[in-house]
Amino acid sequence: MPDIAETDSYGMLCEDWGTAYLITRTAGNDRLYQAERRDDPGVVLQTATPGALRELIRTDYFARPVPREIAPLTAPASPGASPHGRPPSPRSPRRPVTRCPP
Image 1 (spheres, rainbow, N blue to C red):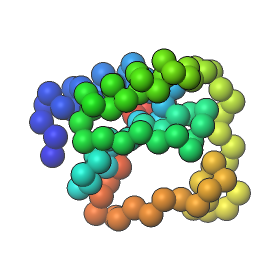
Image 2 (tube, one colour):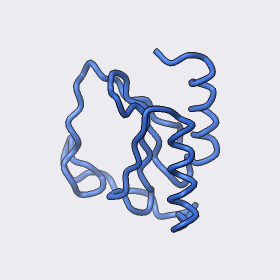
Image 3 (cartoon, one colour):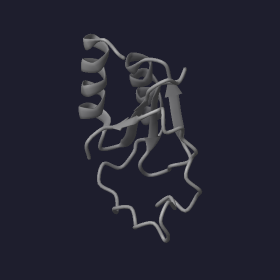
């Protein structure tokens, strides 16, 4: 379980960058923190700490800014399908994923 400072850092990361990136935290994974560009889901940044993820996001964003207002994702065509048109990534039920609020 992350400590309070790490949890606070994750919350601030979500608040600062959550409109441009889908930010998640997966328990039990070496690369615990992940950010997926909302305008290009093929770009996924992963690292072990929220501070390191913030630096990766800043580098990515300043090289190619993410529009802050994009069209909403369409509903999946079938149950379990990804709204991005690609198969869902396999996740162990023992590894809960925390997402930033939209």
